[in-house]
Image 1: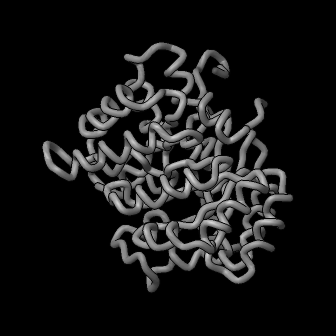
Image 2 (image 1 turned 45 degrees about the vertical axis):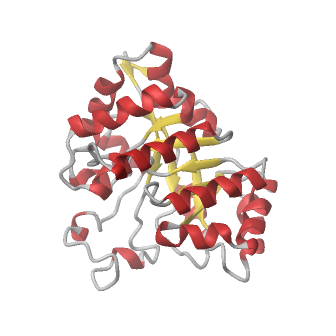
Length: 296
């Protein structure tokens, strides 16, 4: 793993930048959903420079996940990133899998060097969307253009997980990265729901070309605790191949709970029990490999 002046650095594969004066960001406006009472705390400009400062200059690269800059013209966000980012990075662009112009959007985005994949936030529509023949064809087309699919949905949903697994089976070339994979099990203790989450994690972990990001804790519980996260980590470390797992932040939303640097220091402590190669993988090298991030 890269070291800078003796400090172990990391790659964060799930960050969002908000250029409020350039993009739309309708979801960040108070009169639009989601109606989070603490939305104002994150509805402010963030950039690569603010990320570097927040990391205490320990970050060596990142993956930028589409943040609602302009969902109708997702390439605008990519052009902005390419003009303003200097660390090694890749980007996940927004895509509407149901849009009449989706194939043209995929063609355009696939030509942009920083774009490694696409995301349509599936959430409660995951089962219906991933079961639809047209959506499956679009996802296949995406994979044929060399783009991975960033899947954000509720892993506690058996039907959504089954629909995604079926999609993966039908498209052998498809690479899928699961967003916030671990957070769904955060507050599940000795319950049928916990067993369901574990079963779905195992099924996804056994699938080929599927990676998982461990992040987004604050989306489940603004006051999440490290001991609760550690219980989830232990299950994943024991049952999923370590080279399929990546630690990530969901910056800047993670700062609802912890300062960014504090979060990564906590991550380093949580993985310290593992072999050095696994620690390096979870903190940086797996993200570098899954997202094809160049070394600086």
